[in-house]
Amino acid sequence: MNTTATLSRLFAGIQSDMDQVDSLFQERATSGLPILNSASMHAQGSPGKRLRTAITLLSGKLKHYRFDKLLLLSVAYEMLHLATLVHDDIVDEATTRRGNPTVNALWGDKIAILLGDYFFAKTAGLIADIEDPRIDHLFSDTVATVCEGTILEIMTAGRIDLTIETYYEKVKNKTACLFAACSKGGAIVSQSSPEEIELLYTYGMNLGIAFQIIDDILDYTEDQSTIGKPAGNDLRQGMVTLPLIYALQEPNTYQEQIQHLLNGSARTEEEILAIVDWVSTGSGVKRSLMDAHTYANKAREALYHFPASPDRDVLDELIDFVVRRNR
Image 1 (tube, rainbow, N blue to C red):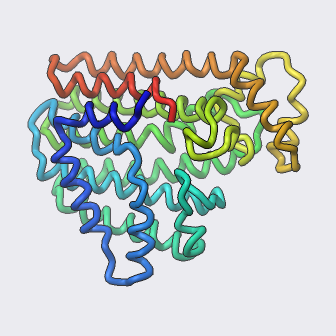
Image 2: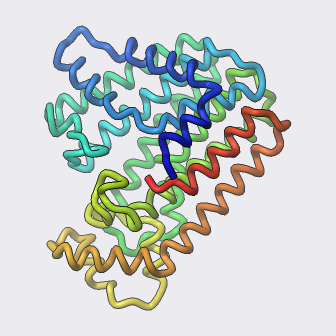
């Protein structure tokens, strides 16, 4: 799948609005302090897929499209997402993201922490300008939930006995809740009914879960040339994800090696890749992919309560994009 071409086609109808989101983001993220401004511009250098912006705008288009409000909300969500990435890189001690140096690698942890805080502060002004207390509460709850998910991830690192239930709790809190906030926020701003707001929240939550499962699968099935990090990177960082959880449920001879690796013991590249190959070719990836499709179908079921329209079609196609992508 050509990711860029697929998203360009899907987002053609909202491209001009997405461009305005980008412009306002740059405007609000600009600082008069040179070092902070340089770090901010660098963090924005790899914009990613902009799925969250698209979900926010398209959810708004299903009812009454109030772009002036959705513009502010979209920028706030993208800025929140970028802030969490900057802070994640500090926690993970990462030196690269998508093949480029991280903010903490170039400017150090102190500047990176403050840049993330700067982005968080800027989102407060954006949300205030929307002038809807429901959005205020949604946004603050989302930030708090992402923090809880990140802490849960730290606390469960290295746990070879991580349960599927805890894995999903972590995924919902750290990743999926922001997708859900985007679709729910779009619905709130567009004056949807309480039932429609809940349906779009369900859509975003299940789409976000499917997205993270696929991300975790790709960590075992793709290499640095496609995902920008070496295969098995989660494993190297002591992170137990769904493919490994499922793989460990089958009889295997890797239990001890995996435990040593998760504990931080040095292993050869050959040993690591042997584990990666075992997970990717066994039942771990296959069962995880089945779960991703299950959550994708739940997202589609919620979406299909809305009347057919070109905008619903794009949200529908985004589900297929999420589960079929290779990076």
